[in-house]
Length: 87
Image (tube, rainbow, N blue to C red; front, top):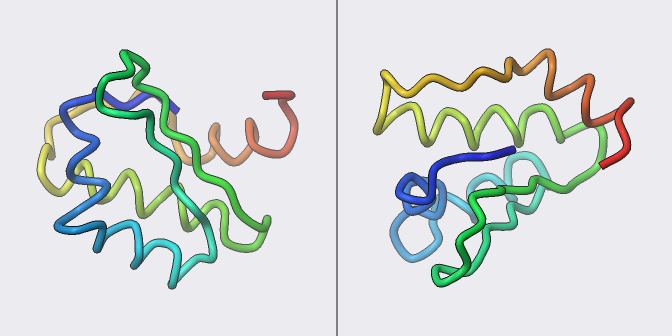
């Protein structure tokens, strides 16, 4: 999913703490582009059982700091895209 680069720091958290929590609770890893890479694509990888929860946690981290930020993709679409669309 595409998340503005300036919000990536909120997904990572202090010293990677948010990434560790997401991995611990969902079993999903979150892949972010390097700081010098212009890409804004954030990838969540994991088992089917935890993938939707992992995506939801990533979005919650960003929305916590930017509640007015609008994501046109709903979790229902992300779930559909994860299992039915070739990425």
